[in-house]
Image 1 (cartoon, rainbow, N blue to C red):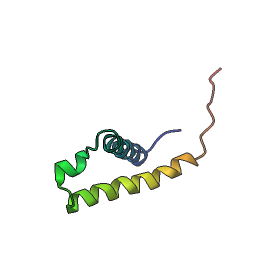
Image 2 (cartoon, rainbow, N blue to C red):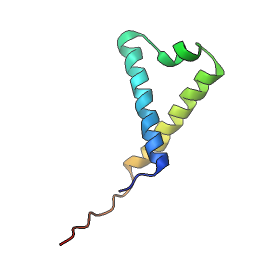
Image 3 (spheres, rainbow, N blue to C red):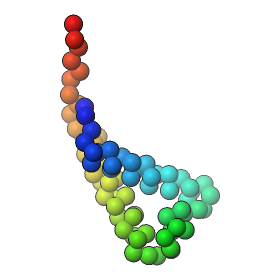
Image 4 (cartoon, rainbow, N blue to C red):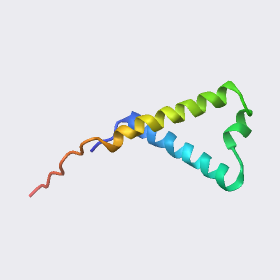
Length: 72
């Protein structure tokens, strides 16, 4: 199954969000807040976009895959 550019972008954003949570969980370090400020509009926007990407990525779990064609 071919992934669309939106699918790929959503997966990348979800992975970035997961890595951010890993850093928070292991080290108490939040790189997004450290880069852009604790409670700035940019931080809330980044978290919102990553959250929307996560919601969109749920659809990837339920898509039908195309059968693989074998060339004989």
